[in-house]
Length: 154
Image 1: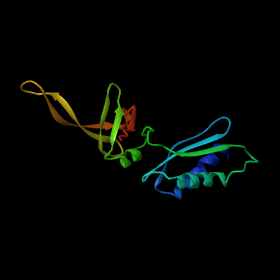
Image 2 (image 1 turned 90 degrees about the vertical axis):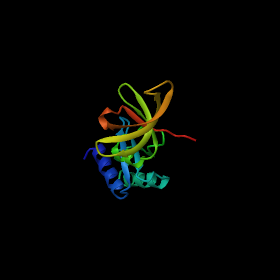
Image 3 (image 1 turned 60 degrees about the vertical axis):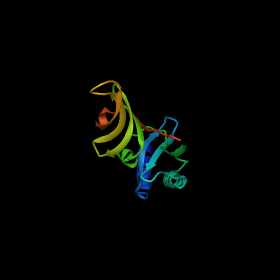
Image 4 (image 1 turned 180 degrees about the vertical axis):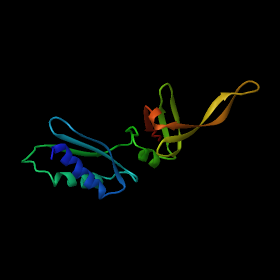
């Protein structure tokens, strides 16, 4: 079995022991640096990273192939990639970049195909001068999203 396939299988076995965790990214560089990025429905704690790391490391032989291994959480500022990540962030403010606009809005729902955003905007009044606050909402299919990140506010 090729090294990458062996690592992938060990990674899948390790994640299967923790059903709330899921894989965001996995790569092996030319110099055998294994990088695993995980996320979780309830977040990721250090012990989760240790457990996934051990499930890989304890089943590989460094005598056969020398490697380095890094298991990390996606992080608060990482772009969202999977529908599962969107679902766990319902109620939070996102900055969503589309082809020709960027929307900062509250994520109100997400399914397997699209996300639902709501925000308030100031627009010119339909009658008279001045502006009024209006509630806006939009559905955006995942394929239209160039980048989406959670907005962190203090």
